[in-house]
Image 1: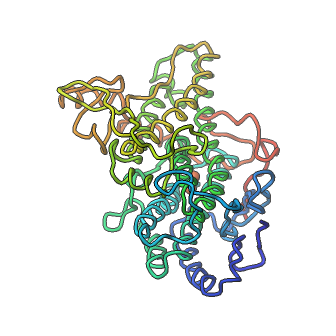
Image 2: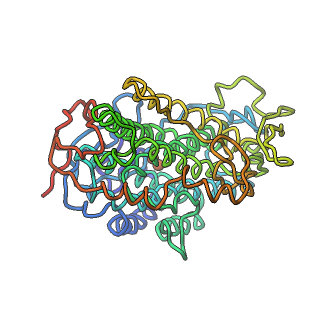
Image 3: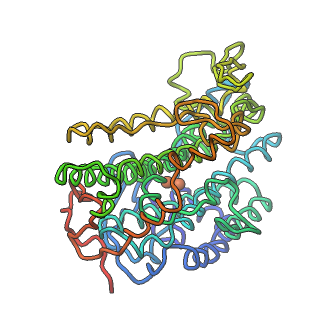
Length: 474
Ligand SMILES: [Fe+2]
Ligand SMILES: [Fe+2]
């Protein structure tokens, strides 16, 4: 499964063996490059960045690191190796051979799934496009650009599926993916969280820690799909996604470290004093966590969903680690818990497991986010600081699902409109908080130097030193 870089579009799918498809994708390519130069990272075209590029799809040693000009990055089509005789692992087609072509009756559902996933990829590049101008270090700038080029590649991954398997409709969707814009009033991206701004590096790190992790869970569920090309595409995307979440988790950990160091050095928990020292106080970090967590929670959709049920029953989208789960893989007769407000109380109810699959995937993600938050908490713990980060209640600040009509506090108390209005500024970033965080953002671009509000990482990328010249300006 080596990757052919001698072609216009690098690939491991024998693209030259299908001239019609190759022509269609080569026709789409200039549109993609135009989109990248218009909506990709600001002022990045002429710099050399120490990037990893996929050279194989094998789990060990797939990446090659070298300086690359951003505009010369080789975006391509890489699928994980086919498993011979792979079967459908769940739903009503359980045990049948996986589909190599789209079954006619599932064509529109699969197209929708692929387009929705595909739309998030360029959206995040658009959301993050100004961040390079305020990077806290060359190390961080390199990581941002690595995430950006790989999200661009993820768009390629989805557009390949659309072109290869959905004919004219697929090609039209490919064009539409380049036409929508994050936050645009007339032609926005599909999902709300991908129309929010990512105005500063704290938001970027929270986004990659929390929202890229939603990406991981969506891709993992799609990697189980009975539609084999989708499964293989998602499996390789997941290997790239791990780095995005690392960037987020370690980025926030370094901010916490820096703040804890300042708290100890100056023996203070006072927010105004800490802000005077130019670090981000822990309560403000908690507010950003609350915001990104709740907005990303919505991406999983309603707790109870007939769409989710039919995606599963039809073999299109599985559960997280479906094949490792020990049950009938059809969910006949089983139930799953969810929460709802009944008579002004939050109660746990049970629904047929098939209809509660969004909630289940959300729960898998919550556990993973919680594990990361617990790792963060070791930093204040080690420093002898009492503060601990917590995830808010699932019903907090929700716009989709059963809590939409209610105001829930982070502790899970149902609030009146008046109480919410009075208290929500304690829980979500205020204009003032955001303005403070933005005021810290200034470009640090000398090698080995880091902005005052973030600690250097413990080690560099690909065993390079921390003060390595990760980005060269020409
Ligand atoms: Fe992605
Ligand atoms: Fe990602």
